[in-house]
Image 1 (cartoon, each protein chain N blue to C red):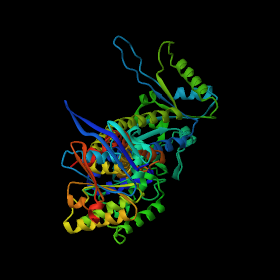
Image 2: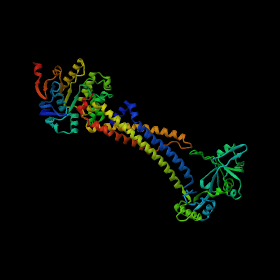
Image 3: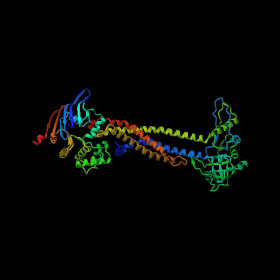
Image 4: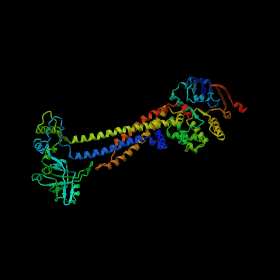
Length: 232
Length: 407
C-alpha cells in the first residue's frame, strides 16, 4: 500500500456565479521515502493539491487515502489531528511565531499533541540540532537570518516525526547561497528516510528531487522519475 | 491544550502591548476600583455606626416625638411627649430598667474672659450615664441628688473645656451657661469626631436645669431613652410602651402614633438600608463601567485576531483544533480582564484610603473584605469571558488556507 493514494480527486470552488475547477481528476500514488517535486504554472492547481495532501482541505470528489485512512470523510478535529501527526509543513514565508524563542517555536506541534513539558523540550532540542541550530535555541525570529528562520521552521516540521515533509516554495524568500544550503538540508533529510514533497515552479529546485509531477489546469500533465536522468 | 501554558502566552502578549492593554481595560479598572473603594468606605462607616450602637446594647430603646403633617381642614393638637410620660413608663412598664428624658438646646458659655457656643447643651437625668454607656473622665456625671436639689451643675466635653481655656482640671470651676452660673462637676470621656460631628463639643446639665435654660415649653417635646431589663420579648415590651403612650395621649383607634419607638435593632437596620442604597447606586454606575470595559476588551480582541490571522492559520496547520484556538483567545481575553481587575483592586484600595482620610470623623482605616476582592475578580473574569467569546469564535473558525495567505 502506498503512503499516499489520490484517486480521481476533484476540487471545485464556487466563485460567485462561476465554478472554478482547481483540481479536475488527479490520480497520484506516493510511496514512503520518495523525494517528489510538484510543479506547475500559476493556476495549475499545485497549491490546491498541496493543501489537499496536507489535509488543510478535503476533496469535493474522489478519494485520498493517507497511510490507510480515508481523509475525505474526516471531520475538522480529526483533520487537525492528522496534520499534527502526519504532516510537517514548511512555508515560503517561514510563519514562525514572533516574540517566541526558536525552541518554543519548534515545540508548537508537540504542545498540540499533548506532549509533557520536559519531553517536549528534549524533542525540540533534538530537532534543532538536526538542522544545525543547536546553539540558537533561545533566539527569537527577529534575531535570526532568513536561512536560520527556515531551519527553525524545518525543525518544527520534523519534531513530531511526521510521515510527510510538505514544503511550499521553501527557498522563495532566500538568497541563492542560502537556498542551496536549505535544499541540501532537504536532500539530507530525504537520505535519512523522510518523505519529502516540494511544491515549486523553479526547475533547478525541482532538479534536487527524484520525481517530478507537473500539473496543468488541474490535471497531471507529466509524472517523471528524475533519478534515471541524473545517473544517466 | 494546557490552560497554564495559555495563560503564560496571554501574559506575554499583554506585556508586549502594555499601553494598549492598560487602555483597553480602563473601564474594568475604574469599575472594579469604584466597587472596592465604596465597599471599603461603607464597611468603615458601618463599623463606626454599629460600634457606636453596640455600646448601648440590644436592650436599648428610644422614644421620639413624631411630628404630624397638617392636612387641610384638620385640627392638629401639638405633639407632646413629656417626662411625665417617662415617669408613667417607669412605674407602669416593669420591663423598663432605667429611663431618662433628653432635650437639646443651644446656649452661650462663659468662663472668665472666654466665650463659646457649643454644638449643643443637653438636659438629662442620672440614668443617662447607664443607658448610653457614657463615661466620665474627670469628676462625675449628674446624679439623683443633683436633680432632687436642683443643683446648677454641668458636665462638659473636652472640646468645650479647651475652648473655654479651662486647663487640665476643669472640675470644680464655675462657668456661665446661658447666663446661669454652674459648677463643672465632670468632663466627658473623649470620643472624637463621628461623621462630621464633634462628640466632645457638648455640655450636659440636669433635666430641670435645662428646662430653666430653655423654657418650660421645651419640656413638651422630650426624647425618652431607656434600657429594658432583658432582651426577652422586646416586641412585647414595645407593644406595652405603645399602648401606654397612646392611652396617655388620648389617641383614638384610627389615629396614628404621635411618637416613634426605636430599638437598637431598628436603628441599625435603618442605617444598613441607607448604606445599602448607596452601595446599590454605586453598583449601577459600576455596571456601566464594566460594560464599557467589556466592550473595550472585545474590540481589542477582534483587532488582535485580525493581526494574528497568519499565526492562527499556522497553528491550525500544525494541529490546533478549533477548540484549541477558541480556548487560547478566550483565556487571553480573561487574562486581560483579570489583569485590569487586579489593577482596579489596588487602585480601589488606594482610593478608599484617600477617601477615609477626607471624610470627617475617625473612620477605621480602609479595609477591603475578602469577599469584595473575590467578587471583583469574579466580575472581571465574567466580563472577560463574555467579551472574549465572539472574537475567540471568529479566530477558531478561520479557514487555515485563507489565514495562511493573509497579508
